Structure formats: C-alpha cells, structure tokens
Image 1 (cartoon, helix red, strand yellow):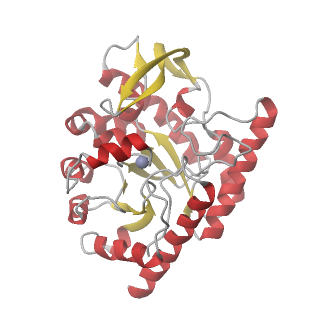
Image 2 (tube, helix red, strand yellow):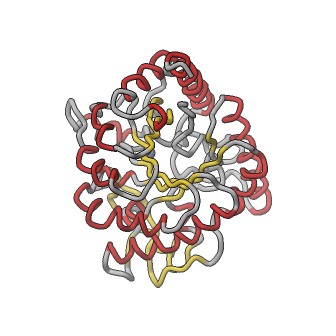
Length: 340
Ligand code: ZN
C-alpha cells in the first residue's frame, strides 16, 4: 500500500548540465556527454532507491527538456528554425523548433537510458514521454496546418516509442500533459483521443501527468491568479475517469486543489502529489501522511501512490533529495496508520 513514485525528472549533477534551470546547456559533448548521461542515470536510480522510492525513473538525465528531448530525434522537426512563442496559453515564452515536413521517428529515442535504468534496478521502473497535446503546444508548425492532425502524427510516433520501451522492461509509461490544465475544452475534443493513440495496445501500465507546472516564477505567478480554489481539474477528471489510461498524476501538495475533486477519478490509480516542487521548504513526514489521509477519503487506499507534484529538474539537488526522503518517510507513516 502507498507505493511511492516521482513525477519523473530529477536535478542533474552540475558536471552534466548547468544546475537549477530549464533547458540547461550540457557541460560536455561527444562521447564524454554520452558517458556522463549514463553515469547520471545510474546515480539517480541509486538516489531514489536509497530514499526509499518504490517505482523509480531514469530521472530524465539524458534529455535536456521533457518535450524537446523527444523532438530532437524526430525527422520533420527543424531545430535550426527556432521561433519564440507563448506556450501554455501565453503563460510564458519559449524558444521552440518548427515542424517543416512529415514527422518520422528515425530510431528509438530513449532506448539508451531506458536500458541503463532497467539493468541497474530491480524496482518497478516508470518512463516518461511528453503527451501529444503538450508537444503541439511546445512547437511551431509550418507543415501540418492543423493541431489535431499534428497531435495524431506525434501520437503515432509516441506509440512506437512506448512499445519499444515496454519491450525493454519498462513497467509504467507516463505521458506528461501539463497542457491538459490549460486547454480544458480541447482535452476532451482531441487531447484524450490523441493520448489514447499514444498508449494504444501497450502491455504495461499507462499514466498521464497533469499539473500546474514546474516551480518556476511564471507558474508561481500564474497560480496566484487562479483564486482561492483551483477547480481546473473538475472539468477534465470526469473525462480522464472514462479514458483508457490507468493512472493519473496530479498536484495536491501546497496546491489549492479541493481534495474532494479526486473522487471524480473513480476507477483510476492516483499518483498523489504530496511534495511541492515550487517551494524550498521540505515537507515533514507528518504533512505528507496528512495529504495521503485526506486523499484516502475520496480514493481507495490501494489506488493511492504518493508522488511529487511535478518534475524536480530546476530544483537544487540536495533539496530535491531531502524531499524524496520526506516522501518516503511520509508514506511509511501513513502505511502504519492504515495498518499495512
Ligand atoms: Zn508537472
């Protein structure tokens, strides 16, 4: 009961990439970079195991960004044609590549780090991929001319990649869809259908991560405008509950999400965000256990998986590790109280 996991990313060691920033430049190149990515993946597996995390990830050590790490390997995406555009409904600007031709996955994108992670842990292993709607929101398009067609084209490539990862022994494939929290109407119209295409026929568990974004200033400022209660999930949870995705990862720690909304996810596993990634204060085990207990009033305990709110990549490394330890200690405390 209360097996712990993380949303996906962890801070990179300073010898691999510039710390505490998104899209951090690599510190090395060529073969040295390949080896450094390998070493960092191994290190982050070990850090999670030592912290007591049950379902571990590769910490996204081998990719520069959770969306562009995938796009870099896709034919038809031109990184020399970068444009600055507002993303997440203009919440912040990002420099994004452009789709200039038909999309094709030339080769496996993440087989390298998935194999390293699988070789070095016996724990359950989760692997994250960007969701189709979030990709479409993080790229410029000069070829397809239609968001839905573009999303479906990416979903097909994601599905091929996900099948390879499952074959390599990955236990859970998670699609990251922070855009689900922004374009609520489109989520039901084409976001979930695209997600279904991405997850089609997978033999492993599937998850979707939605959230209010990394703990960066643009997101913190945005959250301050959302009022006393954040009810965005109310619109999309019923649609996710009827989807074919097994697990939903949501932000609950330090968030103004009314916890009873989790009741709308009937029949789904809930990866319950009990660790805030937007502040520097380490949760106490008691706080973590309290969030679990509150959620247990609306979600069956066997469906609750304590988790971080979101990725930790822009965070101070030692702070992130302390938060993982708190996550694990809080889950242990809650297990004791629920008698398991
Ligand atoms: Zn997130």
